[in-house]
Image 1: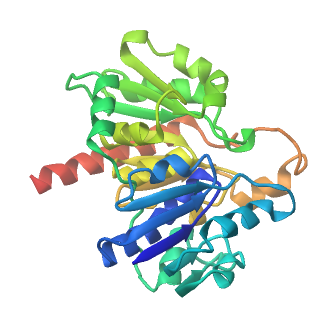
Image 2 (image 1 turned 90 degrees about the vertical axis):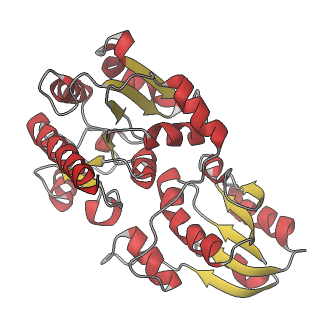
Image 3 (image 1 turned 180 degrees about the vertical axis):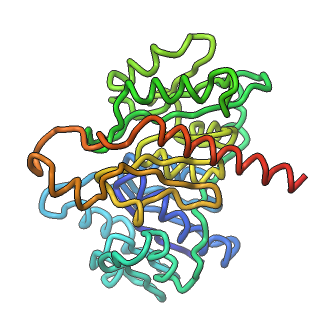
Length: 323
């Protein structure tokens, strides 16, 4: 059997879509998989079982990327075609079963919408497949001590939903201080290659011996292997937040001008903390839709530290009971 899986350009949506891919990979063991997605998201699919190829689809004028995709796959027979971008491509390729997402249902979390699409509710959790080399590389990057690991994503692709660096600095200091829930933790800071300058104040606030960083210097699968080892992920609403949730680590996403009901970290230990202002109030009061203002003003350090502390405490208590 062969599966053509067409998914998002954006990392966060691509991570969520792995729940659908997981369903087909686990339902049909041995199914051969071709993934078509944006270049940024492509690396998260490199470990998919029975992967035949990844087709990167950078956007082109006049829908040229769809024409190139069609030409590259039209000579194959596809037992299942999944198109999560709602294009017409699935209907002009030779295949048996077609699953096409058409628009969004704003009454559901995006992952629940995907579950509904494939008829599996509750939906499967997202999964990013790792290999031994990914975990070995993570072990080489991180300290081998028993100290806790706090992973922080202090950046995002839009200034409006990026919590202030000085608030990240204060929250990290409180969480890792003596008596804090992450007392003495090593801090791994993560972000996209072009986001390091944005994160520089946060990076520099942590002593060198207590920090590591990955800003495009390692593969996304290595980042994922690091997240698997984390005791807490704290970060803005972003693709990295969704990766953290998929890893199973306690994940706290910070929300303001994006809807947590649609994009909160979806996992047993995923939580969202949002600004005191609702999404609608933020949108009504911004300067303009084109402004570059920060829209996270009403999310306090105290609120984030309390939410993070409660999440980690609950996780450790559950771990204790499981033992």
